[in-house]
Length: 160
Image 1 (cartoon, one colour):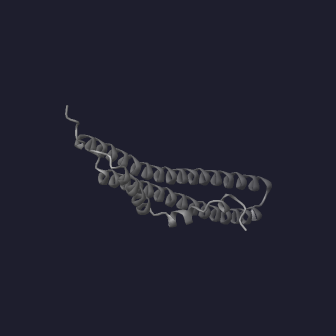
Image 2: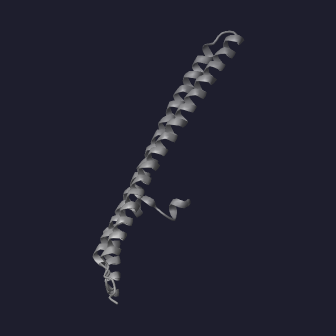
Image 3: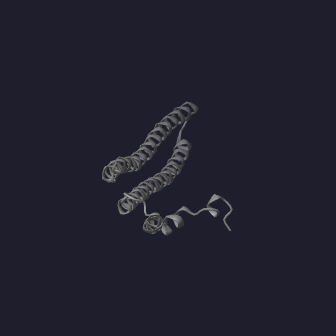
C-alpha cells in the first residue's frame, strides 16, 4: 500500500479521467438556466471550452517536460555510475603517489565540468517546458480578452 502523497492523489489517473468537454457541458447547462438578457451563452461556453483546452494543453506540455527531465536525470545517474567505475579502475592503475594525486585532480575536474554541463542541460529542459506551457496560457488569455471585448460590443444596449 502506498503511503506517500501519491497515495492521496494520482496525477496520471486524474489526467486520464479528466474530460474538459464534460465540464463545459455542465457549465453550459448551468449558464442556460439563468437566461441572462443580451448575453450570448453559446459564445461564453465556447470561450470557456477553449480556456480548458489551453489549460489542458499547457499541463500536458509541463508534465511531458517533467517526464523528460526525470528520464534525463536517470540517464545522467547511469552515466555517472559508469564514469565512477572507470575512475576507480583508472586509479587502481596509477603508479606513484604524485601520479595518483594528478589523476585524482584530473578526474575531479572532469566530473565537475560534466556536472555543470548536466545542470545546464536540465535547467534548459525545464526552461523550455515552462516557456511552452506559459506561451499556451498567454495566447489563450489574449484570445479570451479579445472574445470578452467582442461579446461586450455585441451586448444589446438598453434604450433610453
